[in-house]
Length: 420
Image (tube, rainbow, N blue to C red; front, side, top):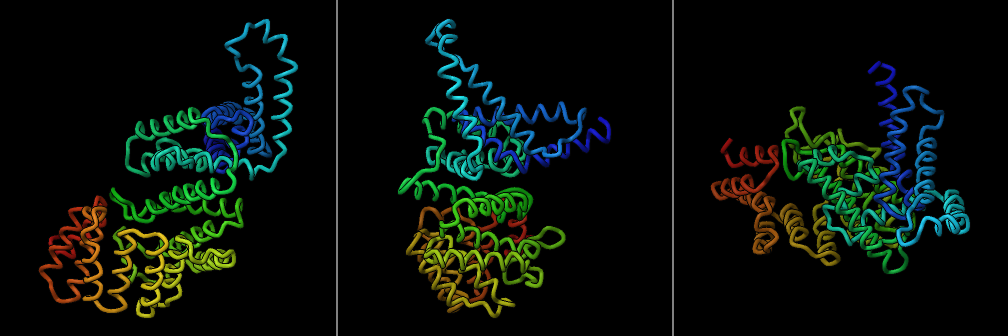
């Protein structure tokens, strides 16, 4: 492959990553099938890979891909077989019925592309799919990630991700999930699923559950991009802005969270001069927007408010832990969970002393969901160490190290246990 061809291929990949979601969304509105839409969009991508090295990159490459995919979709509908009728019958009826359908589809092309993208978001994150399938399909359709990229991000095999995506598309087809934006109560339920998927992607990037890396920045960036798009598509939804605020503020710490060698740096030890002030300002603005829409007490907005307490403190000593503790208390009422209570225990320990924090942590230690959660013994180890109960602390840190699947985190915990 020549240098020129290599550059053309890189251009195609970049355009595809940016435009693929809109292309798939536009085609899905025509064919009403997400799996078929992705197939036709990829046909357009293949056509670009074959033609552009010979003809050059078009002036509007995204529009070229969209038009090619759209034309293939219309051709597919024209050729769609009617298995229960003879070819003669099909021929007699083709002009009247299928030309009407094609006319409807061509008219639909002029609709707001944002509506198409929003429809695709709701379809990819439909609750009929399990969380893992929703995440994989969202990253494939909306993020433009390849199967291999998704597999590497989540440390599973490429075949596993491929199967999840195939099964997800099949399930959507079998369930006849409509390509539309839901309304009323159904929209509210489905939006919660969409936000959950974006947050799952972000969390995996922010604190990788397994592997050799403490963070996976590409996943954080992808989740933040999806969140920003969603905020533009549904600007009146307070919790969308709450989630964007949370991700923006947390993302601001990215450069300070690891050493040059990739070792984790905990929040209180971070150099706050390295926090990205632009992201913090964006996050605070999104949080203010959520509040203006009446969503200050939504689960994501409350978590963003907690993150904002850290962002506003110029150093760790200035952190308003009493307010953070109160916010966690409110979050526990709005979205109760043992993990929220454990986080609240940390805030209590910072505000009222290690004995109070340890008591709060021990109060939820019996919850089944925390039985193998490595942060419970890590939190207990921190408080025990501050109380001077060194041997117990080391045992807790060793227990935490045995439970985590992240190698960087394990090294830190083993170091605290005195076993590294």
